[in-house]
Amino acid sequence: MDLELKDKVAVVTGGSVGIGLAIARGLAAEGVHLALCAREGRRHATEANTISADFGVNVLDVAVDVTNSEDLGAFVAAIESKFGGADILINNAGTGSEETILEADDDRWQYYWDLHVMAAVRLARALAPGMIKRGGGVVLNNASICATQPLYYEPIYNTTKAALVMFSKCLANELIPHNIRVNTVNPGLVRTPDWYKTATIITQDMEQTAEEFLQGIADQYAPIKRFASPEEIADFFVFLCSARASYSVGSTYYVDGGWLNVVT
Image (cartoon, rainbow, N blue to C red):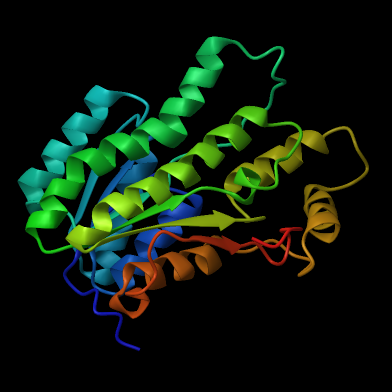
C-alpha cells in the first residue's frame, strides 16, 4: 500500500524514545524527512543520526523543552530554515504524573498543562499557517486512554490529556477548511522505557520481577493480555498521516488492546 508520504516533512516531539521514536522511524521508512525534538540532547542526536543512516532521509534534531515557549520558538525557526515548513505535526511529548489533587501545588499543575496542552497549542499555532500555504497537512496528538478512563494515581495527567483531546476536536473543526486533518490517538498499555523503569522501582523489595509485574498489569487491564510495542502504536500514527486516511477528521482513536470499558 502506497501511503504517499515520500518527501513530506514531519515534526515529532519527544522523538528520541518510546512511541515518539517508533513514529519517527515508521515515517522515515516511508521516506518522510523529520524534525525531531526532545529534552535529552545526546540520546536524541544519536537516534537522529541512526534514523538518517538507516533510511536516507534528512533529520533535524533540536534539544527542546516543550514546556518552554522560547525553546519552541527556536525549534520552529530551525524547521523553517531547514525545510521551509512542515506537512505533519505529531505532538507526542509527555509523561505520566503521580500525585493527589489535595497535595499537588500550582507549579505541578502548570508544568503538565504546558507539557501536554500548551506545547500542542503553540506548535499548531506556529506551523499551521505554513501547512495552509503548502496545501494542507496533518496534526496528530498523542493523548491517552486516561483522558476517558482515568487512573487513580495521576489526576493531573488524566485532566491534561482530556484537555488535549478537546483541543484536538476544536482544532480539527477550525483547520479542516484548509485541508489540514487533526486527530487524536489514545493508546492503552505501551511497553515504553518509562513503564519498565516504574516496574523495576516498584518490585525492588518484592519477590516479583519487573516482567512479572508488567504481565500482571496487562492481565488486569487489557483483554489482549499484553502491552503494545511502541511500533504497534506507531503504525497507526503513520497510517493516519497518510492519504489513505483522508476521511479521518476530528476523531479520537483508542489503540488499547480492548482496555476501554465504555462505548464512545
